[in-house]
Image (cartoon, rainbow, N blue to C red; front, side, top):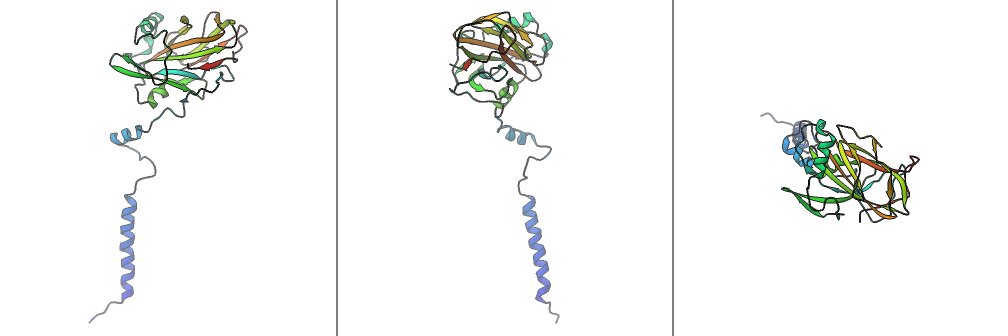
Length: 250
């Protein structure tokens, strides 16, 4: 009769345990998303999108323009869907027609509140009071972070510029990607037409007057394919950025 020494079984048992442990280790979730994600996995990852770090909620704390005079606190309306195949259609006539269209009640006079909603056709859109950490307002990131349409869209923006005194011979300087139109206290100040990238001070207004106290600055930006953003500041008659302003949303 042949007898097996007990010590012979110990390595075998160890190998079985090692194999079982290895099988469990392979089924553990990976540290990061693997390559070649399936569509349902992409949707799951998209659910964690947000507008941070490109925006933060606006506060009631005193807010002045940045060191170069750019305005960073705005009320932004979620994007209005438009049928746009190419940005070459952005002629002055096209933009005036697009921006003169009535999308929601009192669109040229309303000072919206954060969270307030408007109905545009079948869309229900909300206003967001936000601040940008950069000089430009990244509208594409705003739309993308809120899971909204980010191409072929029209954005509305409103802010309140509080001036400590009457300022004459001021110019409104704007850059936008793509076309845009801007109004100060209800009067058209700047229009940027064509398919363009955002460049600071790409368009400047004729000489304007900032009233002492509240001044309402309103803008509309439209874009087809590509990124959307804008930057806005005031320049004095010497071309120096105006920084002694207070920016609020109400």
